[in-house]
Image (cartoon, rainbow, N blue to C red; front, side):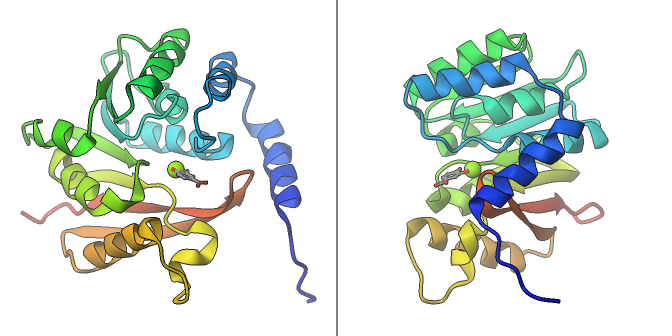
Length: 228
Ligand code: DHB
Ligand code: MG
């Protein structure tokens, strides 16, 4: 079979095509992206298909408590929190108070005010202050990549055995695996892979993704059950 190269245009068209069958339009999510753009937030939110994936994952494990590191404009926050039961909650960490203000508007507009709590400040500080009662079912790490290992260590401490930790942007257009490339983001991902590879209490895989947000990937990890 001949190799045909695909481009960003094809990937975006593919996402739009699939989403048209599987993901009904959602006003609050559309408004969240629009407001984020209007206020100049970087366009780093997960794609619609990835947001739906996070939502389905949370539903699959019946997540009642979730942790997010990196709120940005609250787009993935809304996808995740929409999977929560009535008494569920999501704690999300954001270093920028300007981003957090936009996210709060978006979260309120999505009717999730009572379920979502944004904590403004460096996530390491925020998370270090949470008592370790392993009460979170799921953590989503999508913040500065340099701190991936520190975030992962905190997420692991706070997520229950059998709980899930997802990390965004672990492929970066294949650059993470390219020995000729190096920057603080790429190195942050490499350090995380090394850390997880050496940790017998974590089981993980990388799921490469391609679509409107380019070629990247999620790291999908579970805090292994039956290990103390
Ligand atoms: C980029 C994308 C992300 O999802 C993110 O969290 C940070 C940066 C980017 O495209 O550069
Ligand atoms: Mg990301």
